[in-house]
Image 1 (cartoon, rainbow, N blue to C red):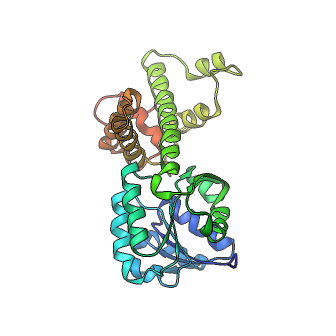
Image 2: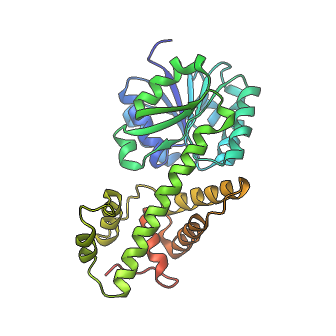
Length: 298
C-alpha cells in the first residue's frame, strides 16, 4: 500500500477541517463533505474536492474518516454514503460517540465490507490545526498499513488500545480522558466565579498555588480565555462539550458508576448554551454561575 492515499473526510467542522488540511499537507488526495456545505467549501482552495453528497465524497476512497457530531449522525451519514462505499476501504471513525453506538457502526462496516477502526482523538482546535492530536485507535492489524499514514498526518501520537474496533476500547479511553478535561474545566470556571463573587483578585489565587501540586497549565489556559474574553473561536465548543458530558454520564450509569461531577458539568454546559454561549469555548460554562442570562467577566 502506497503512503499516498485518497482520504474522504465526512464532517468538516472545527476538527474535521483542520484534519483535512493536514492530510492535504501530507500529500494525500482529500475528498470532503459537510452537511452545511459552506463549512467545507474553503477546503477547495487548499486542494480538496468538496462533494455535494456523502456518496459522491466516498467514491474511490482508500480511507473514510468521519468527524461528525455523534454516533447517530455518523451512522446516518454513512448510510447515505453506502451506495458508493468501496468494499475493502478502511473506515477511521474519529467522532466522540457513545460506547453502545460503536457496536452499531462496526456492524454497518462489516455489512459493507469496510475495515473498521474506532479512532477518537484527543485535542482541540489548535492541536488539530497543528497536526498534534493524539489518536486513540482500535482495529485490525491487517489494515494498519493503510490507516497509519492518515493517523500520522493528523496526530503526533497514536495509542493502540486493541484489535477489535467493535469493542470500543478506544472510545472508552476517550470518555475517561474527557471526564477529566470536563471536570478540570468546570473547576476552573467555578473557582473564577467564586473569586468574582467574593471580590478576590484571581491573580491572588494563582499566586497562592504557583509552582505547587495544585498548579496546572490547563487551569491557566482556560482561566485566560475567561478573563481576557477570548472565548471565540472555540477550541472546544460548549455545545459539543455538553454532548460529551452526557455521553460520559450515560456510560457511567450503564456500567455501575454514578458520576455526580460529570452530571453537574453537563447541566452547567447546557445552561451556558441556553444563555447563548453554545458556540464559544467550553470555558464559557463559567457564565452558568451567574443567573439566567449572559454575564460579563468584569
